Image (tube, rainbow over all chains, first blue to last red; front, side):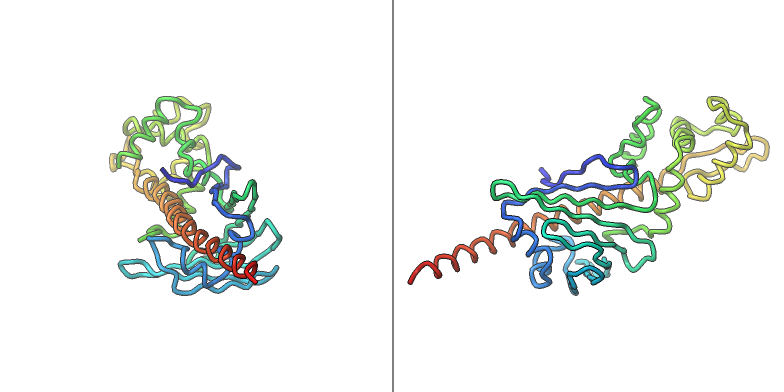
Length: 153
Length: 123
């Protein structure tokens, strides 16, 4: 079972939560140090070929990934807030001019750390798509059918 | 591809879906093709108002209109919906895989931290 939880948020948000069996300082270090980022970001799905991190307000970051079957994609943005347990940055996918705002918080409890990531898009209804609730709320059977149809495709 | 859909296409899909009337129209079309008149019936809305929503849905590629000049029945095109929900699913999978790998890195860091602590404690 996946340890990554998706949580209900505002209509334009995706919220992810994940617990790590390590203290906060260690988790933040692993997530903000280029040499360490290269070892985990993308997991088995993509390889980090570039990881640049300038972790200060106004500083930028850039991750470039390579896919197993060729092809590249990137995430890049600027840090808006850098705190001991909270980082806010913008995120652009493949240098698209539209950006989302990503707020990450790390909460340590009994040696374990919960990371909460809130990704806010400028376009609404995204959360509906994510949670699959937009198609199921309010209109009963017909929405269920649409959902069924969509998932069966 | 991890993210096969362009942000432009996603935006069109998401903004078309942002409206509850348009979502209800899609839900109705999931049960079968329908004319503008049939679609307008359950809503307290004029046919021109419904037609406006249909144009938004058509531009987003979420519906197509039939050739029959009289009825021009609307049909649900589910591909953009599938692509949009697939995009987010892949986004989730990307982070899921990343965080699973991060678990391993954290174990390594903890081991290193314990080792250096032990070295410091030994005189």
